[in-house]
Image (cartoon, rainbow, N blue to C red):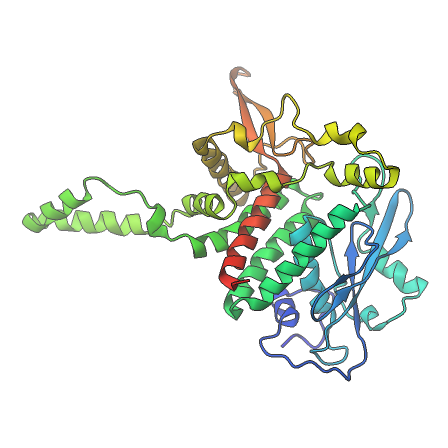
Length: 395
Protein backbone atom coordinates (compact mmCIF):
# COMPACT_ATOMS: atom_id res chain seq x y z
CA UNK A 1 0.00 0.00 0.00
CA UNK A 2 1.34 3.42 -0.95
CA UNK A 3 1.27 6.52 1.25
CA UNK A 4 -1.93 8.52 1.25
CA UNK A 5 0.05 11.64 0.30
CA UNK A 6 3.35 11.13 -1.53
CA UNK A 7 4.37 14.75 -0.87
CA UNK A 8 6.63 15.19 -3.94
CA UNK A 9 8.93 12.32 -2.86
CA UNK A 10 9.46 8.94 -4.50
CA UNK A 11 9.66 5.62 -2.66
CA UNK A 12 10.26 3.31 -5.58
CA UNK A 13 8.98 0.17 -3.83
CA UNK A 14 5.52 1.77 -3.99
CA UNK A 15 5.95 2.24 -7.75
CA UNK A 16 6.98 -1.40 -8.22
CA UNK A 17 3.77 -2.60 -6.56
CA UNK A 18 1.64 -0.16 -8.58
CA UNK A 19 3.20 -1.13 -11.91
CA UNK A 20 2.42 -4.81 -11.44
CA UNK A 21 0.18 -5.53 -8.47
CA UNK A 22 0.57 -8.98 -6.94
CA UNK A 23 -3.15 -9.46 -7.55
CA UNK A 24 -5.36 -7.26 -9.67
CA UNK A 25 -8.79 -7.21 -11.28
CA UNK A 26 -9.60 -5.10 -14.33
CA UNK A 27 -12.49 -2.66 -13.87
CA UNK A 28 -13.75 -2.25 -17.42
CA UNK A 29 -16.57 0.10 -16.42
CA UNK A 30 -14.11 2.55 -14.85
CA UNK A 31 -13.60 5.90 -16.66
CA UNK A 32 -10.31 6.40 -18.49
CA UNK A 33 -7.45 7.62 -16.34
CA UNK A 34 -4.25 9.20 -17.62
CA UNK A 35 -0.72 9.63 -16.41
CA UNK A 36 2.18 11.38 -18.10
CA UNK A 37 5.78 10.73 -19.10
CA UNK A 38 8.45 13.33 -19.80
CA UNK A 39 10.53 12.06 -22.73
CA UNK A 40 13.72 13.48 -24.23
CA UNK A 41 12.46 13.02 -27.80
CA UNK A 42 9.36 13.52 -29.90
CA UNK A 43 7.14 10.43 -30.01
CA UNK A 44 4.94 10.75 -33.10
CA UNK A 45 3.16 7.40 -32.92
CA UNK A 46 1.53 5.60 -29.98
CA UNK A 47 2.94 2.47 -28.34
CA UNK A 48 0.20 0.04 -27.31
CA UNK A 49 0.52 -2.65 -24.62
CA UNK A 50 -1.88 -5.24 -23.25
CA UNK A 51 -3.19 -3.08 -20.38
CA UNK A 52 -2.19 0.50 -21.27
CA UNK A 53 -0.76 2.71 -24.00
CA UNK A 54 1.70 5.59 -24.44
CA UNK A 55 0.36 8.36 -26.66
CA UNK A 56 2.28 10.77 -28.94
CA UNK A 57 4.07 13.63 -27.22
CA UNK A 58 2.99 17.22 -26.78
CA UNK A 59 5.94 19.58 -27.33
CA UNK A 60 6.24 22.66 -25.12
CA UNK A 61 8.73 25.30 -26.22
CA UNK A 62 10.92 26.74 -23.46
CA UNK A 63 13.44 29.62 -23.41
CA UNK A 64 16.56 29.23 -25.53
CA UNK A 65 17.10 25.90 -27.25
CA UNK A 66 15.01 23.93 -24.73
CA UNK A 67 11.73 22.10 -25.12
CA UNK A 68 9.75 19.56 -23.14
CA UNK A 69 8.11 16.45 -24.59
CA UNK A 70 5.07 15.27 -22.61
CA UNK A 71 3.56 11.88 -23.46
CA UNK A 72 0.09 11.04 -22.09
CA UNK A 73 -0.31 7.47 -20.82
CA UNK A 74 -3.71 5.76 -20.90
CA UNK A 75 -3.53 3.85 -17.64
CA UNK A 76 -4.61 0.27 -16.93
CA UNK A 77 -7.93 -0.23 -15.18
CA UNK A 78 -6.73 -2.18 -12.19
CA UNK A 79 -6.48 0.40 -9.40
CA UNK A 80 -8.84 2.74 -7.66
CA UNK A 81 -9.79 6.05 -9.26
CA UNK A 82 -7.08 8.68 -8.73
CA UNK A 83 -5.21 6.78 -6.03
CA UNK A 84 -1.59 7.87 -6.57
CA UNK A 85 -1.74 6.83 -10.21
CA UNK A 86 1.49 8.72 -10.88
CA UNK A 87 3.37 5.86 -9.18
CA UNK A 88 2.58 3.73 -12.23
CA UNK A 89 4.16 6.22 -14.63
CA UNK A 90 7.26 6.60 -12.45
CA UNK A 91 7.82 2.84 -12.77
CA UNK A 92 7.01 3.02 -16.48
CA UNK A 93 9.57 5.82 -16.93
CA UNK A 94 12.21 3.52 -15.41
CA UNK A 95 11.38 0.70 -17.82
CA UNK A 96 11.25 3.09 -20.79
CA UNK A 97 14.63 4.58 -19.85
CA UNK A 98 16.09 1.11 -19.30
CA UNK A 99 15.07 0.02 -22.81
CA UNK A 100 16.07 3.19 -24.66
CA UNK A 101 19.13 4.36 -22.72
CA UNK A 102 17.50 7.81 -22.57
CA UNK A 103 16.64 10.28 -19.83
CA UNK A 104 12.91 9.87 -19.08
CA UNK A 105 10.94 11.11 -16.10
CA UNK A 106 7.40 11.22 -14.73
CA UNK A 107 5.57 13.58 -12.32
CA UNK A 108 6.33 13.06 -8.63
CA UNK A 109 2.73 13.75 -7.65
CA UNK A 110 -0.64 12.81 -9.08
CA UNK A 111 -2.53 16.09 -8.95
CA UNK A 112 -2.15 17.05 -12.62
CA UNK A 113 -2.48 13.42 -13.67
CA UNK A 114 -6.20 13.71 -12.93
CA UNK A 115 -6.63 15.91 -16.01
CA UNK A 116 -7.49 14.27 -19.33
CA UNK A 117 -7.07 17.51 -21.31
CA UNK A 118 -4.03 19.56 -20.30
CA UNK A 119 -4.33 23.35 -20.23
CA UNK A 120 -1.40 25.71 -20.84
CA UNK A 121 -0.83 26.20 -17.12
CA UNK A 122 -0.45 22.45 -16.47
CA UNK A 123 1.71 21.99 -19.57
CA UNK A 124 4.02 24.68 -18.23
CA UNK A 125 4.23 22.98 -14.82
CA UNK A 126 5.11 19.71 -16.53
CA UNK A 127 7.59 21.30 -18.95
CA UNK A 128 9.86 22.79 -16.28
CA UNK A 129 10.32 19.35 -14.69
CA UNK A 130 12.29 17.93 -17.63
CA UNK A 131 13.66 20.56 -20.05
CA UNK A 132 15.49 19.05 -23.03
CA UNK A 133 18.32 20.77 -24.93
CA UNK A 134 17.47 20.49 -28.63
CA UNK A 135 20.41 22.30 -30.29
CA UNK A 136 24.07 23.06 -29.71
CA UNK A 137 26.83 21.05 -27.95
CA UNK A 138 25.36 18.25 -25.88
CA UNK A 139 21.94 18.46 -27.50
CA UNK A 140 19.61 15.47 -27.30
CA UNK A 141 18.71 13.54 -30.43
CA UNK A 142 15.03 14.50 -30.32
CA UNK A 143 13.78 13.09 -33.65
CA UNK A 144 13.32 9.34 -34.03
CA UNK A 145 13.65 7.57 -37.33
CA UNK A 146 10.92 5.06 -38.13
CA UNK A 147 13.50 2.29 -37.72
CA UNK A 148 14.43 3.49 -34.24
CA UNK A 149 10.77 3.85 -33.26
CA UNK A 150 10.03 0.26 -34.31
CA UNK A 151 13.03 -1.05 -32.34
CA UNK A 152 12.01 0.85 -29.22
CA UNK A 153 8.38 -0.26 -29.50
CA UNK A 154 9.29 -3.93 -29.96
CA UNK A 155 11.80 -4.10 -27.13
CA UNK A 156 9.60 -2.11 -24.75
CA UNK A 157 6.64 -4.40 -25.41
CA UNK A 158 8.80 -7.49 -24.89
CA UNK A 159 10.36 -6.12 -21.70
CA UNK A 160 6.97 -5.37 -20.14
CA UNK A 161 5.71 -8.80 -21.16
CA UNK A 162 8.72 -10.37 -19.44
CA UNK A 163 8.16 -8.33 -16.27
CA UNK A 164 4.57 -9.59 -16.10
CA UNK A 165 5.62 -13.23 -16.57
CA UNK A 166 8.35 -13.33 -13.92
CA UNK A 167 7.82 -14.85 -10.48
CA UNK A 168 6.84 -11.90 -8.30
CA UNK A 169 9.96 -11.85 -6.12
CA UNK A 170 12.19 -11.89 -9.19
CA UNK A 171 10.03 -9.18 -10.74
CA UNK A 172 10.80 -6.98 -7.73
CA UNK A 173 14.53 -7.67 -7.98
CA UNK A 174 14.47 -6.98 -11.71
CA UNK A 175 12.64 -3.67 -11.25
CA UNK A 176 15.15 -2.59 -8.62
CA UNK A 177 18.02 -3.10 -11.09
CA UNK A 178 16.01 -1.43 -13.87
CA UNK A 179 15.56 1.57 -11.57
CA UNK A 180 19.33 1.85 -11.09
CA UNK A 181 19.84 1.97 -14.87
CA UNK A 182 17.11 4.64 -15.02
CA UNK A 183 18.78 6.71 -12.29
CA UNK A 184 22.05 6.42 -14.19
CA UNK A 185 20.50 7.93 -17.32
CA UNK A 186 18.83 10.85 -15.57
CA UNK A 187 21.93 11.66 -13.44
CA UNK A 188 24.63 11.24 -16.07
CA UNK A 189 24.68 14.90 -17.15
CA UNK A 190 24.87 16.15 -13.57
CA UNK A 191 27.58 13.69 -12.54
CA UNK A 192 29.15 11.30 -15.03
CA UNK A 193 30.87 9.29 -12.27
CA UNK A 194 27.55 8.73 -10.48
CA UNK A 195 25.89 7.63 -13.72
CA UNK A 196 28.72 5.16 -14.40
CA UNK A 197 28.60 3.87 -10.83
CA UNK A 198 24.84 3.25 -11.03
CA UNK A 199 25.16 1.21 -14.24
CA UNK A 200 27.66 -1.17 -12.63
CA UNK A 201 25.56 -1.28 -9.46
CA UNK A 202 22.49 -2.23 -11.52
CA UNK A 203 24.24 -5.35 -12.79
CA UNK A 204 25.66 -6.47 -9.44
CA UNK A 205 22.51 -7.81 -7.66
CA UNK A 206 21.42 -9.74 -10.75
CA UNK A 207 24.95 -11.05 -11.27
CA UNK A 208 25.20 -12.36 -7.72
CA UNK A 209 21.81 -14.05 -8.11
CA UNK A 210 22.81 -15.67 -11.41
CA UNK A 211 26.46 -16.60 -10.74
CA UNK A 212 27.36 -18.54 -7.61
CA UNK A 213 30.38 -17.72 -5.49
CA UNK A 214 31.59 -21.31 -5.77
CA UNK A 215 31.68 -21.19 -9.57
CA UNK A 216 34.28 -18.39 -9.64
CA UNK A 217 36.25 -18.96 -6.42
CA UNK A 218 39.86 -19.99 -7.15
CA UNK A 219 40.90 -23.43 -5.96
CA UNK A 220 43.90 -23.75 -3.67
CA UNK A 221 46.01 -26.60 -5.12
CA UNK A 222 47.39 -27.57 -1.71
CA UNK A 223 44.15 -27.41 0.27
CA UNK A 224 43.62 -31.17 0.18
CA UNK A 225 47.16 -31.61 1.45
CA UNK A 226 46.48 -29.22 4.35
CA UNK A 227 43.28 -31.08 5.23
CA UNK A 228 45.16 -34.39 5.34
CA UNK A 229 47.84 -32.79 7.50
CA UNK A 230 45.25 -31.44 9.96
CA UNK A 231 44.04 -34.99 10.65
CA UNK A 232 47.44 -36.07 11.91
CA UNK A 233 48.50 -32.74 13.44
CA UNK A 234 45.88 -31.33 15.86
CA UNK A 235 47.82 -28.05 16.19
CA UNK A 236 47.38 -27.41 12.47
CA UNK A 237 43.55 -27.73 12.53
CA UNK A 238 42.85 -24.27 14.10
CA UNK A 239 45.05 -22.63 11.44
CA UNK A 240 43.17 -24.40 8.66
CA UNK A 241 39.82 -23.42 10.17
CA UNK A 242 40.91 -19.78 10.42
CA UNK A 243 42.09 -19.82 6.80
CA UNK A 244 38.81 -21.31 5.51
CA UNK A 245 36.74 -18.92 7.60
CA UNK A 246 38.61 -15.91 6.21
CA UNK A 247 38.33 -17.29 2.69
CA UNK A 248 34.55 -17.63 3.04
CA UNK A 249 34.22 -13.89 3.65
CA UNK A 250 35.32 -13.14 0.08
CA UNK A 251 32.20 -13.08 -2.08
CA UNK A 252 34.19 -12.61 -5.34
CA UNK A 253 31.60 -10.12 -6.57
CA UNK A 254 33.99 -8.66 -9.15
CA UNK A 255 34.58 -12.10 -10.67
CA UNK A 256 30.86 -12.87 -10.62
CA UNK A 257 30.18 -9.54 -12.33
CA UNK A 258 32.58 -10.41 -15.16
CA UNK A 259 31.22 -13.97 -15.48
CA UNK A 260 27.63 -12.68 -15.60
CA UNK A 261 28.36 -10.22 -18.42
CA UNK A 262 30.31 -12.80 -20.41
CA UNK A 263 27.40 -15.24 -20.04
CA UNK A 264 24.37 -12.95 -20.51
CA UNK A 265 25.78 -10.24 -22.78
CA UNK A 266 28.89 -11.74 -24.44
CA UNK A 267 31.04 -9.63 -26.80
CA UNK A 268 29.42 -11.05 -29.94
CA UNK A 269 26.17 -9.38 -28.82
CA UNK A 270 27.87 -6.01 -28.42
CA UNK A 271 27.65 -5.52 -32.19
CA UNK A 272 23.91 -4.91 -31.64
CA UNK A 273 24.83 -1.58 -30.02
CA UNK A 274 24.04 1.12 -32.55
CA UNK A 275 26.54 3.79 -33.52
CA UNK A 276 25.77 7.05 -31.63
CA UNK A 277 24.84 8.69 -34.95
CA UNK A 278 22.73 5.75 -36.21
CA UNK A 279 19.34 7.28 -35.45
CA UNK A 280 20.14 10.77 -36.75
CA UNK A 281 21.57 9.35 -39.99
CA UNK A 282 18.51 7.11 -40.43
CA UNK A 283 16.15 10.03 -39.76
CA UNK A 284 18.00 12.27 -42.25
CA UNK A 285 17.91 9.50 -44.84
CA UNK A 286 14.17 8.96 -44.36
CA UNK A 287 13.25 12.62 -44.87
CA UNK A 288 15.76 13.28 -47.66
CA UNK A 289 15.59 10.02 -49.58
CA UNK A 290 19.40 9.81 -49.76
CA UNK A 291 21.10 6.92 -48.00
CA UNK A 292 24.58 6.32 -49.42
CA UNK A 293 26.03 9.80 -48.84
CA UNK A 294 26.04 9.50 -45.04
CA UNK A 295 26.56 5.77 -44.55
CA UNK A 296 30.30 6.23 -43.97
CA UNK A 297 29.62 8.06 -40.70
CA UNK A 298 28.51 4.92 -38.88
CA UNK A 299 31.17 2.62 -40.34
CA UNK A 300 34.28 1.58 -38.44
CA UNK A 301 36.98 4.24 -38.62
CA UNK A 302 40.70 3.54 -38.91
CA UNK A 303 41.44 4.39 -35.26
CA UNK A 304 38.39 2.73 -33.69
CA UNK A 305 38.55 -0.37 -31.52
CA UNK A 306 35.80 -2.97 -31.93
CA UNK A 307 35.15 -6.03 -29.71
CA UNK A 308 36.57 -8.23 -32.49
CA UNK A 309 39.94 -6.47 -32.05
CA UNK A 310 40.27 -7.75 -28.48
CA UNK A 311 40.73 -11.28 -27.23
CA UNK A 312 38.70 -12.87 -24.45
CA UNK A 313 41.17 -12.11 -21.68
CA UNK A 314 41.48 -8.48 -22.71
CA UNK A 315 37.72 -8.09 -22.57
CA UNK A 316 37.55 -9.77 -19.18
CA UNK A 317 40.24 -7.37 -17.94
CA UNK A 318 38.27 -4.38 -19.24
CA UNK A 319 35.13 -5.57 -17.45
CA UNK A 320 37.11 -6.16 -14.26
CA UNK A 321 38.47 -2.62 -14.54
CA UNK A 322 34.90 -1.31 -14.82
CA UNK A 323 34.06 -2.92 -11.49
CA UNK A 324 37.29 -1.50 -10.02
CA UNK A 325 36.40 2.03 -11.19
CA UNK A 326 32.96 1.63 -9.63
CA UNK A 327 34.57 0.63 -6.32
CA UNK A 328 36.85 3.67 -6.47
CA UNK A 329 33.78 5.90 -6.80
CA UNK A 330 32.02 4.07 -3.98
CA UNK A 331 34.82 4.25 -1.43
CA UNK A 332 36.80 7.34 -2.50
CA UNK A 333 34.44 9.42 -4.64
CA UNK A 334 36.95 9.02 -7.49
CA UNK A 335 35.56 9.35 -11.02
CA UNK A 336 36.34 6.77 -13.71
CA UNK A 337 39.17 7.82 -16.06
CA UNK A 338 36.87 8.73 -18.97
CA UNK A 339 37.45 12.15 -20.54
CA UNK A 340 34.48 12.18 -22.94
CA UNK A 341 30.98 11.73 -21.44
CA UNK A 342 29.49 11.44 -24.95
CA UNK A 343 31.86 9.44 -27.10
CA UNK A 344 31.81 9.58 -30.89
CA UNK A 345 33.20 6.03 -30.95
CA UNK A 346 30.83 3.11 -31.06
CA UNK A 347 32.41 0.99 -28.33
CA UNK A 348 35.68 2.12 -26.77
CA UNK A 349 37.76 5.20 -26.07
CA UNK A 350 41.53 5.38 -25.70
CA UNK A 351 42.85 7.63 -22.94
CA UNK A 352 46.39 8.59 -21.97
CA UNK A 353 47.05 8.35 -18.23
CA UNK A 354 50.06 10.26 -16.88
CA UNK A 355 51.54 9.01 -13.60
CA UNK A 356 52.62 12.28 -11.98
CA UNK A 357 54.56 12.56 -8.71
CA UNK A 358 53.03 15.45 -6.76
CA UNK A 359 56.11 15.88 -4.57
CA UNK A 360 58.88 15.84 -7.15
CA UNK A 361 56.74 17.13 -10.06
CA UNK A 362 58.20 14.37 -12.21
CA UNK A 363 56.40 12.18 -14.69
CA UNK A 364 56.89 8.58 -13.63
CA UNK A 365 55.15 6.98 -16.57
CA UNK A 366 52.67 7.40 -19.40
CA UNK A 367 50.11 4.68 -20.15
CA UNK A 368 47.44 4.40 -22.82
CA UNK A 369 44.34 2.56 -21.65
CA UNK A 370 41.19 1.32 -23.41
CA UNK A 371 37.86 2.21 -21.81
CA UNK A 372 34.37 0.96 -22.66
CA UNK A 373 32.40 4.15 -23.25
CA UNK A 374 29.24 5.03 -21.33
CA UNK A 375 26.91 3.88 -24.11
CA UNK A 376 28.56 0.45 -24.21
CA UNK A 377 28.34 -0.01 -20.44
CA UNK A 378 24.69 1.11 -20.57
CA UNK A 379 24.02 -1.41 -23.36
CA UNK A 380 25.75 -4.20 -21.42
CA UNK A 381 23.74 -3.40 -18.28
CA UNK A 382 20.45 -3.37 -20.19
CA UNK A 383 21.03 -6.47 -22.30
CA UNK A 384 22.58 -8.65 -19.58
CA UNK A 385 19.71 -7.91 -17.19
CA UNK A 386 17.14 -8.26 -20.00
CA UNK A 387 18.56 -11.63 -21.16
CA UNK A 388 18.64 -13.01 -17.61
CA UNK A 389 15.06 -11.94 -16.87
CA UNK A 390 13.88 -13.28 -20.22
CA UNK A 391 15.48 -16.65 -19.47
CA UNK A 392 13.72 -16.80 -16.09
CA UNK A 393 10.35 -15.65 -17.44
CA UNK A 394 10.06 -18.30 -20.14
CA UNK A 395 8.95 -15.74 -22.74
